[in-house]
Length: 187
Ligand code: AMP
Image 1 (cartoon, rainbow, N blue to C red):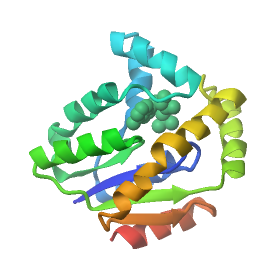
Image 2: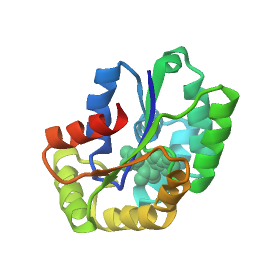
Image 3: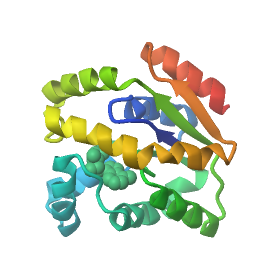
Image 4: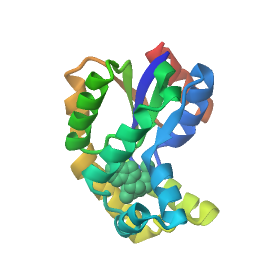
């Protein structure tokens, strides 16, 4: 049983690592980015609203993603733990999450932060743009996503530092090396 948050700038590899770690602990990976992309694809009202922000590299409003997470965490498969991948991304979201978890009588085990320098992130994200064709992976949007991360999400590191469950991980290296250091720090 593990309740984990994976944090890190866009392109840090949190999705890839969450994918590996969820198999190890047999827990669901909850990616707000993936859920929003599904909503966009299905053309729901929420998806249509979210798309504007996503395409610009801005954050979708807190109330929208907090609602998504609230609905998801009460599902039965989360009773044995979960990995939040890409949520929370603002202090407001982190506070809302604390409240939701308290209501559900759940406690977080670890907040994993993948640390990767900006130059490396731009390189990786441009590479992914070509491979996956994500509409938010062009150069201008990438720059805005990094800026958004640095201004809105980075303050979360301090928010979680005080809780004693923050694990800082060097996100440079092979996939296996990074998985190893994550597993060592969260066991
Ligand atoms: P991701 O796949 O995690 O990089 O998310 C892609 C995009 O979805 C982000 O650039 C945001 O526009 C939006 N998004 C995903 N998660 C969140 C969140 N927790 N808060 C606000 N916007 C989000």
